[in-house]
Length: 458
Image 1 (cartoon, rainbow, N blue to C red):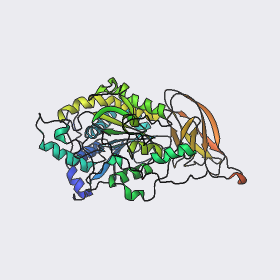
Image 2: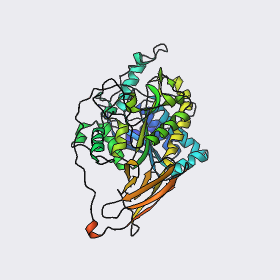
Image 3: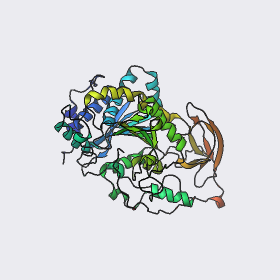
Image 4: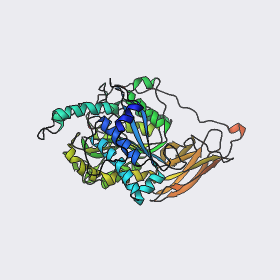
Protein backbone atom coordinates (compact mmCIF):
# COMPACT_ATOMS: atom_id res chain seq x y z
CA UNK A 1 0.00 0.00 0.00
CA UNK A 2 1.16 3.53 -0.70
CA UNK A 3 1.91 5.75 2.21
CA UNK A 4 -1.22 7.89 2.70
CA UNK A 5 -0.83 11.39 1.38
CA UNK A 6 -1.21 14.10 3.99
CA UNK A 7 -1.26 17.87 3.71
CA UNK A 8 2.26 18.47 5.12
CA UNK A 9 3.68 16.04 2.58
CA UNK A 10 1.66 17.66 -0.18
CA UNK A 11 2.95 21.03 0.90
CA UNK A 12 6.51 19.79 0.63
CA UNK A 13 5.76 18.24 -2.73
CA UNK A 14 4.50 21.56 -4.02
CA UNK A 15 7.37 23.76 -2.83
CA UNK A 16 8.81 25.74 -5.66
CA UNK A 17 5.70 25.37 -7.78
CA UNK A 18 3.85 28.51 -6.83
CA UNK A 19 3.38 30.69 -9.86
CA UNK A 20 5.08 28.26 -12.22
CA UNK A 21 2.35 26.92 -14.46
CA UNK A 22 3.54 24.34 -16.95
CA UNK A 23 4.35 26.10 -20.20
CA UNK A 24 2.21 25.44 -23.24
CA UNK A 25 5.00 23.62 -25.04
CA UNK A 26 5.75 21.23 -22.18
CA UNK A 27 3.84 18.07 -23.10
CA UNK A 28 4.68 15.04 -21.02
CA UNK A 29 3.10 12.10 -19.28
CA UNK A 30 2.25 12.72 -15.64
CA UNK A 31 2.77 10.09 -12.96
CA UNK A 32 0.69 10.59 -9.83
CA UNK A 33 3.06 13.04 -8.12
CA UNK A 34 3.40 14.97 -11.38
CA UNK A 35 -0.37 15.14 -11.77
CA UNK A 36 -0.76 16.49 -8.23
CA UNK A 37 1.94 19.10 -8.86
CA UNK A 38 0.32 20.16 -12.13
CA UNK A 39 -3.14 20.61 -10.58
CA UNK A 40 -1.84 22.58 -7.61
CA UNK A 41 0.25 24.73 -9.94
CA UNK A 42 -2.90 25.68 -11.85
CA UNK A 43 -4.73 26.39 -8.60
CA UNK A 44 -1.86 28.62 -7.48
CA UNK A 45 -1.81 30.44 -10.81
CA UNK A 46 -5.60 31.06 -10.84
CA UNK A 47 -6.57 31.00 -7.13
CA UNK A 48 -9.73 33.09 -7.46
CA UNK A 49 -11.43 30.89 -10.05
CA UNK A 50 -10.26 27.41 -8.97
CA UNK A 51 -10.53 24.97 -6.10
CA UNK A 52 -8.94 21.57 -5.60
CA UNK A 53 -10.82 18.91 -3.68
CA UNK A 54 -10.59 15.15 -3.28
CA UNK A 55 -13.65 12.95 -3.77
CA UNK A 56 -11.99 9.99 -2.09
CA UNK A 57 -9.04 7.62 -2.34
CA UNK A 58 -8.06 4.74 -4.57
CA UNK A 59 -7.42 1.24 -3.23
CA UNK A 60 -3.74 2.17 -2.72
CA UNK A 61 -4.61 5.44 -1.03
CA UNK A 62 -4.09 7.93 -3.84
CA UNK A 63 -6.42 10.91 -3.81
CA UNK A 64 -8.97 11.29 -6.59
CA UNK A 65 -8.38 15.02 -7.09
CA UNK A 66 -10.86 17.29 -8.84
CA UNK A 67 -9.99 20.78 -10.04
CA UNK A 68 -13.03 23.06 -10.08
CA UNK A 69 -13.35 26.21 -12.17
CA UNK A 70 -15.94 28.85 -11.24
CA UNK A 71 -16.16 32.55 -10.51
CA UNK A 72 -17.27 31.41 -7.03
CA UNK A 73 -15.31 28.21 -6.36
CA UNK A 74 -16.88 25.90 -3.84
CA UNK A 75 -20.37 27.39 -4.18
CA UNK A 76 -23.35 26.28 -6.24
CA UNK A 77 -25.01 29.37 -7.67
CA UNK A 78 -28.70 29.00 -8.55
CA UNK A 79 -29.29 28.60 -12.30
CA UNK A 80 -25.59 27.96 -12.94
CA UNK A 81 -25.19 24.40 -14.29
CA UNK A 82 -22.63 21.90 -13.01
CA UNK A 83 -20.44 20.11 -15.56
CA UNK A 84 -17.80 17.39 -15.23
CA UNK A 85 -15.06 15.74 -17.26
CA UNK A 86 -13.70 12.37 -16.07
CA UNK A 87 -10.48 10.90 -17.42
CA UNK A 88 -8.35 7.76 -17.03
CA UNK A 89 -11.14 5.48 -15.77
CA UNK A 90 -9.16 2.69 -17.38
CA UNK A 91 -5.65 3.14 -16.04
CA UNK A 92 -3.91 2.26 -19.31
CA UNK A 93 -6.03 4.68 -21.38
CA UNK A 94 -4.04 7.78 -20.65
CA UNK A 95 -4.74 10.41 -23.32
CA UNK A 96 -7.83 11.67 -21.48
CA UNK A 97 -5.75 12.18 -18.33
CA UNK A 98 -3.16 14.25 -20.20
CA UNK A 99 -5.78 16.23 -22.15
CA UNK A 100 -7.62 17.15 -18.96
CA UNK A 101 -4.43 18.27 -17.20
CA UNK A 102 -3.67 20.40 -20.25
CA UNK A 103 -7.28 21.64 -20.34
CA UNK A 104 -7.00 22.95 -16.77
CA UNK A 105 -3.85 24.85 -17.75
CA UNK A 106 -5.58 26.17 -20.87
CA UNK A 107 -8.64 27.42 -18.95
CA UNK A 108 -6.44 29.21 -16.42
CA UNK A 109 -4.15 30.77 -19.03
CA UNK A 110 -6.98 31.87 -21.33
CA UNK A 111 -8.97 33.34 -18.44
CA UNK A 112 -5.96 35.37 -17.36
CA UNK A 113 -5.37 36.47 -20.94
CA UNK A 114 -8.92 37.83 -21.15
CA UNK A 115 -10.33 35.29 -23.62
CA UNK A 116 -14.02 36.29 -23.60
CA UNK A 117 -15.30 32.86 -24.52
CA UNK A 118 -13.44 31.16 -21.67
CA UNK A 119 -14.25 33.93 -19.19
CA UNK A 120 -17.94 33.59 -19.99
CA UNK A 121 -17.80 29.80 -19.56
CA UNK A 122 -16.16 30.09 -16.15
CA UNK A 123 -18.53 32.86 -15.03
CA UNK A 124 -21.65 30.96 -16.14
CA UNK A 125 -20.69 27.35 -15.40
CA UNK A 126 -19.28 25.37 -12.51
CA UNK A 127 -16.74 23.07 -14.13
CA UNK A 128 -15.33 20.00 -12.37
CA UNK A 129 -12.35 18.14 -13.88
CA UNK A 130 -11.24 14.72 -12.58
CA UNK A 131 -8.13 13.88 -14.66
CA UNK A 132 -7.73 10.40 -13.20
CA UNK A 133 -10.45 8.18 -11.76
CA UNK A 134 -7.98 5.27 -11.64
CA UNK A 135 -4.56 6.51 -10.49
CA UNK A 136 -3.51 3.03 -9.29
CA UNK A 137 -4.14 1.41 -12.67
CA UNK A 138 -2.27 4.26 -14.35
CA UNK A 139 0.87 3.58 -12.30
CA UNK A 140 0.75 -0.10 -13.32
CA UNK A 141 0.39 0.86 -16.99
CA UNK A 142 3.12 3.51 -16.76
CA UNK A 143 5.57 1.04 -15.24
CA UNK A 144 4.78 -1.42 -18.03
CA UNK A 145 5.25 1.36 -20.59
CA UNK A 146 8.62 2.33 -19.11
CA UNK A 147 9.86 -1.24 -19.52
CA UNK A 148 8.96 -1.12 -23.21
CA UNK A 149 9.88 2.43 -24.12
CA UNK A 150 11.89 1.68 -27.26
CA UNK A 151 10.42 3.59 -30.23
CA UNK A 152 9.88 0.40 -32.22
CA UNK A 153 7.93 -1.16 -29.38
CA UNK A 154 4.79 0.96 -29.29
CA UNK A 155 1.24 -0.35 -29.27
CA UNK A 156 -1.03 -2.67 -27.35
CA UNK A 157 1.21 -5.72 -27.70
CA UNK A 158 3.92 -3.93 -25.72
CA UNK A 159 1.87 -1.57 -23.57
CA UNK A 160 -0.28 -4.49 -22.54
CA UNK A 161 -3.80 -3.98 -23.88
CA UNK A 162 -5.21 -4.85 -20.47
CA UNK A 163 -2.25 -4.15 -18.17
CA UNK A 164 -3.36 -1.37 -15.84
CA UNK A 165 -6.88 -1.23 -17.25
CA UNK A 166 -8.49 -2.12 -13.95
CA UNK A 167 -7.82 -0.69 -10.52
CA UNK A 168 -5.29 -2.14 -8.07
CA UNK A 169 -7.59 -5.16 -7.59
CA UNK A 170 -7.80 -5.53 -11.39
CA UNK A 171 -11.48 -4.60 -11.36
CA UNK A 172 -12.75 -2.85 -14.49
CA UNK A 173 -14.33 0.34 -13.13
CA UNK A 174 -16.54 0.70 -16.21
CA UNK A 175 -18.18 -2.64 -15.35
CA UNK A 176 -18.52 -1.77 -11.66
CA UNK A 177 -21.53 0.55 -11.29
CA UNK A 178 -24.90 -0.75 -10.10
CA UNK A 179 -26.85 -2.14 -13.07
CA UNK A 180 -29.86 0.15 -13.33
CA UNK A 181 -30.48 -0.68 -17.00
CA UNK A 182 -32.19 -3.97 -16.16
CA UNK A 183 -34.50 -2.12 -13.79
CA UNK A 184 -35.15 0.62 -16.37
CA UNK A 185 -36.02 -1.87 -19.09
CA UNK A 186 -38.42 -3.59 -16.68
CA UNK A 187 -40.04 -0.28 -15.76
CA UNK A 188 -40.47 0.58 -19.43
CA UNK A 189 -42.76 -2.42 -19.74
CA UNK A 190 -44.64 -1.72 -16.49
CA UNK A 191 -44.94 2.08 -16.72
CA UNK A 192 -42.64 2.51 -13.73
CA UNK A 193 -40.19 5.26 -12.83
CA UNK A 194 -38.22 6.79 -15.70
CA UNK A 195 -35.50 8.60 -13.72
CA UNK A 196 -33.47 8.48 -10.49
CA UNK A 197 -33.86 4.74 -10.16
CA UNK A 198 -33.23 3.22 -6.71
CA UNK A 199 -29.90 1.60 -5.98
CA UNK A 200 -29.84 -2.06 -4.98
CA UNK A 201 -29.49 -3.00 -1.33
CA UNK A 202 -25.91 -3.10 -0.02
CA UNK A 203 -24.66 -1.45 -3.20
CA UNK A 204 -21.79 0.20 -1.32
CA UNK A 205 -20.33 -3.22 -0.54
CA UNK A 206 -20.58 -4.25 -4.20
CA UNK A 207 -18.43 -1.50 -5.77
CA UNK A 208 -14.77 -0.55 -5.69
CA UNK A 209 -13.52 2.47 -3.67
CA UNK A 210 -13.02 4.54 -6.84
CA UNK A 211 -16.56 3.77 -8.03
CA UNK A 212 -17.98 4.53 -4.60
CA UNK A 213 -16.18 7.88 -4.55
CA UNK A 214 -17.60 8.85 -7.96
CA UNK A 215 -21.16 7.83 -7.01
CA UNK A 216 -20.94 9.88 -3.80
CA UNK A 217 -19.63 12.76 -5.94
CA UNK A 218 -22.69 12.47 -8.16
CA UNK A 219 -24.91 12.51 -5.08
CA UNK A 220 -23.28 15.69 -3.78
CA UNK A 221 -23.37 17.75 -6.99
CA UNK A 222 -26.29 18.23 -9.39
CA UNK A 223 -24.32 17.52 -12.55
CA UNK A 224 -26.14 18.26 -15.80
CA UNK A 225 -23.65 17.24 -18.49
CA UNK A 226 -20.54 15.08 -18.47
CA UNK A 227 -18.07 13.22 -20.65
CA UNK A 228 -15.94 10.24 -19.78
CA UNK A 229 -12.61 10.09 -21.69
CA UNK A 230 -11.28 6.72 -22.87
CA UNK A 231 -8.88 5.34 -25.48
CA UNK A 232 -8.54 2.43 -27.89
CA UNK A 233 -10.78 3.86 -30.61
CA UNK A 234 -11.78 7.28 -31.94
CA UNK A 235 -15.54 7.82 -31.61
CA UNK A 236 -18.14 9.63 -29.48
CA UNK A 237 -20.25 6.92 -27.82
CA UNK A 238 -23.69 7.71 -26.35
CA UNK A 239 -26.21 5.75 -24.20
CA UNK A 240 -27.47 3.23 -23.78
CA UNK A 241 -24.42 0.98 -23.58
CA UNK A 242 -26.47 -2.04 -22.54
CA UNK A 243 -28.71 -3.85 -25.00
CA UNK A 244 -32.37 -4.25 -24.07
CA UNK A 245 -32.38 -7.88 -25.21
CA UNK A 246 -29.75 -9.93 -23.38
CA UNK A 247 -30.79 -13.05 -25.31
CA UNK A 248 -29.22 -11.80 -28.49
CA UNK A 249 -25.69 -13.12 -28.72
CA UNK A 250 -23.17 -12.05 -31.32
CA UNK A 251 -25.50 -9.42 -32.74
CA UNK A 252 -25.59 -5.78 -31.80
CA UNK A 253 -28.82 -3.88 -31.30
CA UNK A 254 -29.36 -0.14 -30.96
CA UNK A 255 -30.53 0.78 -27.43
CA UNK A 256 -31.98 4.28 -27.53
CA UNK A 257 -32.67 6.43 -24.49
CA UNK A 258 -35.74 8.66 -24.32
CA UNK A 259 -33.28 11.47 -25.15
CA UNK A 260 -31.75 9.77 -28.17
CA UNK A 261 -31.88 12.88 -30.37
CA UNK A 262 -30.14 15.13 -27.86
CA UNK A 263 -27.50 12.46 -27.18
CA UNK A 264 -26.77 12.24 -30.91
CA UNK A 265 -26.44 16.03 -30.99
CA UNK A 266 -24.04 15.97 -28.02
CA UNK A 267 -21.92 13.25 -29.63
CA UNK A 268 -21.87 15.10 -32.96
CA UNK A 269 -20.85 18.30 -31.19
CA UNK A 270 -17.65 16.67 -29.98
CA UNK A 271 -17.02 14.68 -33.14
CA UNK A 272 -17.34 17.61 -35.55
CA UNK A 273 -15.34 19.98 -33.33
CA UNK A 274 -12.58 17.34 -33.19
CA UNK A 275 -10.02 17.55 -35.96
CA UNK A 276 -10.58 14.06 -37.36
CA UNK A 277 -13.12 12.08 -35.32
CA UNK A 278 -16.03 13.09 -37.60
CA UNK A 279 -14.32 11.64 -40.67
CA UNK A 280 -15.40 8.20 -39.50
CA UNK A 281 -12.42 6.05 -40.47
CA UNK A 282 -10.15 5.66 -37.45
CA UNK A 283 -8.15 2.77 -35.97
CA UNK A 284 -9.37 0.43 -38.71
CA UNK A 285 -13.04 1.03 -37.78
CA UNK A 286 -15.71 3.17 -39.42
CA UNK A 287 -18.31 5.09 -37.42
CA UNK A 288 -20.62 7.32 -39.46
CA UNK A 289 -20.04 10.94 -38.38
CA UNK A 290 -17.65 9.62 -35.73
CA UNK A 291 -20.48 8.71 -33.33
CA UNK A 292 -22.13 5.48 -32.16
CA UNK A 293 -24.81 4.22 -29.86
CA UNK A 294 -23.06 2.11 -27.23
CA UNK A 295 -25.15 -1.05 -27.53
CA UNK A 296 -25.07 -0.77 -31.32
CA UNK A 297 -21.27 -1.10 -31.06
CA UNK A 298 -21.29 -3.80 -28.39
CA UNK A 299 -23.36 -4.32 -25.25
CA UNK A 300 -21.79 -3.35 -21.94
CA UNK A 301 -23.28 -3.77 -18.45
CA UNK A 302 -22.68 -1.69 -15.32
CA UNK A 303 -21.06 1.19 -17.18
CA UNK A 304 -20.73 4.73 -15.89
CA UNK A 305 -22.49 6.66 -18.66
CA UNK A 306 -25.76 4.71 -18.39
CA UNK A 307 -25.59 5.01 -14.59
CA UNK A 308 -25.35 8.81 -14.85
CA UNK A 309 -28.52 8.98 -16.94
CA UNK A 310 -30.55 6.54 -14.85
CA UNK A 311 -29.50 7.66 -11.36
CA UNK A 312 -28.93 11.42 -11.70
CA UNK A 313 -29.90 14.45 -13.79
CA UNK A 314 -26.63 14.12 -15.72
CA UNK A 315 -26.31 13.28 -19.41
CA UNK A 316 -22.94 11.62 -20.06
CA UNK A 317 -21.24 10.34 -23.20
CA UNK A 318 -18.06 8.28 -23.54
CA UNK A 319 -15.30 9.76 -25.69
CA UNK A 320 -12.86 7.31 -27.28
CA UNK A 321 -9.94 9.56 -28.23
CA UNK A 322 -6.97 7.58 -29.51
CA UNK A 323 -6.10 4.34 -31.26
CA UNK A 324 -3.05 3.93 -29.04
CA UNK A 325 -4.14 3.65 -25.43
CA UNK A 326 -0.80 4.96 -24.14
CA UNK A 327 0.53 7.21 -26.92
CA UNK A 328 4.11 8.48 -26.73
CA UNK A 329 4.65 11.97 -25.30
CA UNK A 330 5.63 13.14 -28.77
CA UNK A 331 2.01 12.52 -29.91
CA UNK A 332 0.47 14.69 -27.18
CA UNK A 333 0.79 18.12 -28.91
CA UNK A 334 -1.10 16.88 -31.98
CA UNK A 335 -3.75 15.22 -29.80
CA UNK A 336 -4.20 18.41 -27.78
CA UNK A 337 -4.70 20.50 -30.91
CA UNK A 338 -7.13 17.88 -32.23
CA UNK A 339 -9.25 17.91 -29.06
CA UNK A 340 -8.98 21.45 -27.71
CA UNK A 341 -11.93 23.00 -29.56
CA UNK A 342 -14.04 19.89 -28.99
CA UNK A 343 -13.47 20.03 -25.22
CA UNK A 344 -14.68 23.65 -25.16
CA UNK A 345 -17.59 23.16 -27.58
CA UNK A 346 -18.92 20.15 -25.72
CA UNK A 347 -18.75 22.01 -22.41
CA UNK A 348 -20.80 24.84 -23.93
CA UNK A 349 -23.66 22.40 -24.62
CA UNK A 350 -24.61 22.50 -20.92
CA UNK A 351 -26.18 25.91 -21.64
CA UNK A 352 -28.86 24.68 -24.06
CA UNK A 353 -32.48 23.74 -23.43
CA UNK A 354 -34.44 25.18 -20.51
CA UNK A 355 -33.65 26.03 -16.92
CA UNK A 356 -35.47 27.73 -14.09
CA UNK A 357 -36.61 27.78 -10.49
CA UNK A 358 -39.42 25.87 -8.83
CA UNK A 359 -41.10 27.84 -6.03
CA UNK A 360 -44.01 27.36 -3.70
CA UNK A 361 -46.68 30.01 -3.14
CA UNK A 362 -44.44 31.85 -0.69
CA UNK A 363 -41.49 31.99 -3.08
CA UNK A 364 -39.60 29.29 -1.19
CA UNK A 365 -37.57 27.08 -3.54
CA UNK A 366 -38.74 23.49 -3.87
CA UNK A 367 -35.98 20.90 -4.13
CA UNK A 368 -36.47 17.52 -5.80
CA UNK A 369 -39.47 18.71 -7.83
CA UNK A 370 -40.00 16.62 -10.95
CA UNK A 371 -39.77 18.31 -14.35
CA UNK A 372 -41.39 16.31 -17.14
CA UNK A 373 -41.45 17.10 -20.86
CA UNK A 374 -44.39 15.78 -22.85
CA UNK A 375 -43.25 13.16 -25.35
CA UNK A 376 -39.91 12.46 -23.62
CA UNK A 377 -40.13 9.63 -21.10
CA UNK A 378 -37.31 10.83 -18.85
CA UNK A 379 -37.87 13.36 -16.08
CA UNK A 380 -35.31 15.47 -14.26
CA UNK A 381 -35.48 16.98 -10.78
CA UNK A 382 -34.73 20.34 -9.23
CA UNK A 383 -31.67 20.67 -7.03
CA UNK A 384 -31.65 21.52 -3.34
CA UNK A 385 -31.81 25.23 -4.22
CA UNK A 386 -34.92 24.70 -6.34
CA UNK A 387 -33.17 25.19 -9.68
CA UNK A 388 -33.55 22.73 -12.55
CA UNK A 389 -31.87 22.26 -15.92
CA UNK A 390 -33.31 20.31 -18.86
CA UNK A 391 -31.20 19.77 -21.99
CA UNK A 392 -33.42 20.00 -25.08
CA UNK A 393 -33.06 20.48 -28.82
CA UNK A 394 -34.69 23.52 -30.45
CA UNK A 395 -38.48 23.13 -30.62
CA UNK A 396 -41.70 23.76 -28.73
CA UNK A 397 -42.34 21.70 -25.61
CA UNK A 398 -45.01 21.22 -22.97
CA UNK A 399 -43.29 21.11 -19.58
CA UNK A 400 -44.82 20.18 -16.22
CA UNK A 401 -43.37 20.70 -12.72
CA UNK A 402 -44.74 18.64 -9.84
CA UNK A 403 -43.89 18.05 -6.21
CA UNK A 404 -45.57 16.12 -3.37
CA UNK A 405 -48.20 18.20 -1.59
CA UNK A 406 -48.50 20.66 -4.49
CA UNK A 407 -50.63 20.98 -7.58
CA UNK A 408 -48.65 20.43 -10.79
CA UNK A 409 -48.07 23.37 -13.11
CA UNK A 410 -47.74 23.13 -16.90
CA UNK A 411 -46.28 25.61 -19.39
CA UNK A 412 -45.46 25.62 -23.08
CA UNK A 413 -42.03 26.88 -24.08
CA UNK A 414 -40.16 27.33 -27.35
CA UNK A 415 -36.46 26.51 -27.20
CA UNK A 416 -34.05 28.16 -29.62
CA UNK A 417 -30.54 27.19 -30.68
CA UNK A 418 -28.79 29.62 -28.35
CA UNK A 419 -28.74 30.03 -24.56
CA UNK A 420 -31.13 28.06 -22.35
CA UNK A 421 -34.61 29.58 -22.01
CA UNK A 422 -35.58 30.43 -18.44
CA UNK A 423 -38.90 28.94 -17.35
CA UNK A 424 -39.91 29.26 -13.70
CA UNK A 425 -42.69 27.39 -11.93
CA UNK A 426 -44.82 28.46 -8.95
CA UNK A 427 -46.62 25.51 -7.38
CA UNK A 428 -49.75 25.96 -5.28
CA UNK A 429 -50.44 23.82 -2.24
CA UNK A 430 -52.81 20.98 -3.02
CA UNK A 431 -56.13 20.87 -1.11
CA UNK A 432 -55.94 18.51 1.84
CA UNK A 433 -57.90 15.75 0.12
CA UNK A 434 -55.52 15.90 -2.88
CA UNK A 435 -52.30 15.41 -0.96
CA UNK A 436 -51.38 12.37 -2.99
CA UNK A 437 -47.74 11.54 -3.23
CA UNK A 438 -46.70 9.75 -6.40
CA UNK A 439 -46.63 6.01 -5.72
CA UNK A 440 -43.17 4.65 -5.10
CA UNK A 441 -42.43 1.88 -7.52
CA UNK A 442 -41.05 -1.29 -6.03
CA UNK A 443 -37.33 -1.76 -5.80
CA UNK A 444 -36.82 -4.91 -7.77
CA UNK A 445 -33.20 -5.92 -7.97
CA UNK A 446 -32.65 -7.20 -11.47
CA UNK A 447 -28.93 -6.57 -11.49
CA UNK A 448 -27.79 -10.09 -10.67
CA UNK A 449 -28.14 -11.52 -14.18
CA UNK A 450 -24.80 -12.90 -15.30
CA UNK A 451 -23.56 -11.54 -18.62
CA UNK A 452 -20.23 -12.23 -20.34
CA UNK A 453 -17.70 -9.44 -19.97
CA UNK A 454 -16.85 -7.56 -23.14
CA UNK A 455 -13.49 -5.88 -22.85
CA UNK A 456 -13.61 -3.54 -25.83
CA UNK A 457 -12.21 -0.02 -25.49
CA UNK A 458 -15.05 1.12 -23.23
